[in-house]
Structures are given as C-alpha cells and as structure tokens.
Image (tube, rainbow, N blue to C red):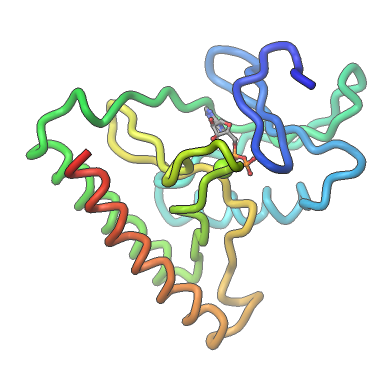
Length: 172
Ligand SMILES: Nc1ncnc2c1ncn2[C@@H]1O[C@H](COP(=O)(O)OP(=O)(O)O)[C@@H](O)[C@H]1O
Ligand SMILES: [Mg+2]
C-alpha cells in the first residue's frame, strides 16, 4: 500500500513527506522495529556531529493510525554529476565524522545493506550539496548498550563497509 506523499518504503517502514523540511518514518501496529529506540539512537548521534539526519519529534497520526518519527528532510543529489576530486573531499569528511561517531560509542551498522530486495547498496548514505549524510539508524548500536565486545565486532564490519563505499562513491 502507498500512503499519500510517500517517499519510499523499506522492509519495515514507509517514509512520507510532511513539508518541505520534514519527513516522517511511519511505525504501524504490527511493526517489529521500535520507534523509541530508533529516536534515542538518532538523538545520541545528533549530539556528536551533523552526520546523522536530525531528529525533530515523535508524533502520532490519527489519520494514518501510525506512530511517526519526524526528522529533517534531506534532499539528495547524484554523485555522478560531481568531479572525483570533490567526491574525495566529501568522502574524507564523511569518514572523519563516522570515526567520530565510533569514538563516541555509536556504530551505524547499515551503511551497505539495501533497504529492501529492490534497493541499492549504500542507500542509507545520501549525498547533499553540503556533503554526505546518514539516515536509518534502525539497527544502529550504542556501545553502552551492547558492550565493548559486540561493539568491536560491529566496528570491524563497518570499517570494511566504509572501504567498499569509498570504491563505489569515487568510481561510480
Ligand atoms: N530524512 C529523510 N529525508 C529524505 N528521504 C528520506 C529520509 N529518511 C528516509 N528517506 C527515504 O526513505 C527511505 C527509507 O527510509 P529508511 O530510514 O532507510 O528506512 P528502512 O529502514 O525502511 O530502510 C530511504 O531510503 C529514503 O529514500
Ligand atoms: Mg534504509
């Protein structure tokens, strides 16, 4: 089913436009994902730097019978319209900011996986005029919740995914 003003839908959630500046990720009754923990992880990352999309508020739509995670609307542009030199600079900033999140105890865990079967790899990384941004902290993890050992494992995977993203982003 498509909602009015729907942007996209992954395996669990649809995302709709609320305005020019805000979108909402919808959580309906039978979803297995938890809106509260997704909001907390987003807020955690927002305190560290601007890489992860900005959390705005939690809301409930009577009309859609859905819980709404309201966030900043990102306007992506296409990598291929920009010089490789510029992409290299964007990538370096992205890698620095991601490492800063890692040091603060946040690991994204979903850089590479497509959002659904038809999705593209790296579709949670969006390029904007101001550089690369991250969305979708649905399966992100915080070190203080999962502990050193699990966090370390997640970091290994993320660092390998980051290398693959570099290849893709620069060479595409
Ligand atoms: N803040 C946003 N601004 C613009 N589009 C977004 C935003 N958040 C999500 N989207 C769109 O909705 C899609 C699904 O959102 P996402 O959070 O990745 O959910 P899923 O867990 O279903 O992958 C994204 O791939 C993107 O196309
Ligand atoms: Mg996604």
